[in-house]
Each structure stands twice: as C-alpha cells, then as structure tokens.
Image 1 (spheres, rainbow, N blue to C red):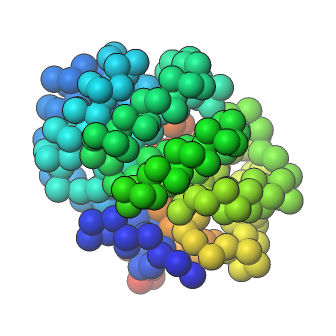
Image 2: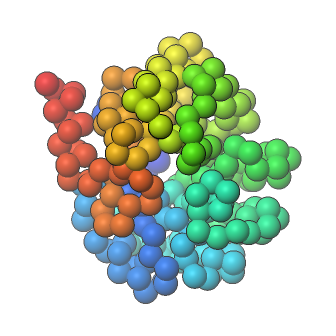
Length: 251
C-alpha cells in the first residue's frame, strides 16, 4: 500500500494519525488558536476555511495559509466544507475551485480537501495542479443524515481512488448500532480488497464514536479529535484520543 508523507508524518503506517480542526472566524483568532494547537499532541491541523470570515478573498486565504503554516510545527490540511456536506457557507463551484487554486499556487498547504461530488473536470484540474506542487489530496464525502449500504460506501471510496485522491475519506451518520457496523465492515472490505492508499472513515455522533478510535483494527488511517470546538458530531478530545489509540494498540 502507498503511504502518504507530509512533512514528518506518514499516513498509512503505525497508529492512526490525529487531525485537529481549526474553526476560528478571524485572522487574529485563527493565528491565536494556531499557537495553542502547535503545542497539542496531534499530527495534522485542518484549517476549515469555510469558517473564515474573509474566505471569499482567495489571496487572503493563501496569505493566511502561509502565516498559519509558520505558526504550526505540523502539516496543514486546508478544507472548504460546502454547505451541502455540512459546512458553514454556500459558494458557487467556480469560486470554491478558484480559492483552492490560489492556495495551491501562492499559499502553503500540505494537503487540501476536495469533495467527491464536485464537478469532475474542475476537480481533475485542481488535483493535477495540486500534485504539481506536491500538495496531497484528501477526497471526501459526508452523509449527515444516514449510513449508505456497505456496497455504496465501498463504491464511493473506490471512486475517490479512481479520481486520483491520495487519501480517501468518508463520514456517515448512524441511526442504529447496525449502521456503525456497516461503516466498519465497509472500511475493512475496502482495505482488504481494493485500497492501495490510506483511508479515513468514520461514523459520526455519539453512537459512532467507537469508529473514531478503532481505525487500527478496521483500516482507517486517521481520525479527527477536538481541541476546543468540534467541527463534527462525536469528535473525541485530543488528549483522550491519543491515550485510547495507544491502549488499543498495546492492550
């Protein structure tokens, strides 16, 4: 299996990596929070730019990504989560891509997040530009209402792989304990049968919390932990997350 190396972090080997979201709204708030996150025992910081109050100015986003990267001693994942997938802001697709292209061209990101169901041609162009700059792609899909069938979860992860994602990510909402098992079974099947690169999978909310700590067992290579405000339901505080992952590894 191909691993993904960003700075000193290798995703796809060893314990699942811990990603912590940064969801402040202002430049001052973002940089102040970055100083705190730099001290945390986590592996990657995800800057959720859909929370940033000046996100529609691509040049400002790119400039701030450079400042942010300097503050952190960790790799930076830049994410614009669209409204339809649970994000803060609705943007025209063209603007979504232009902001990312500005970050890739003149900002600083180790990884960027691209949603699976964005227009295929524009996504392919962005992925090509990112790869030219050695920026890795986390391709993702979120279902905040339900858990698709196991075959559909596997199908979406395989689509991401086919589209050139470096890391394939899916997050679904369980209605029952059986839904959590569906997500875990899909992860295990994908890892065993089809995947040649890292996966990130999770079942959201309190019901799905077990999926956020069981990646070592079922095949998810990273998990999201909360430092302060969680960016999705069911995120475990970072300090506890590291402890649980260590316990599950060593018994």
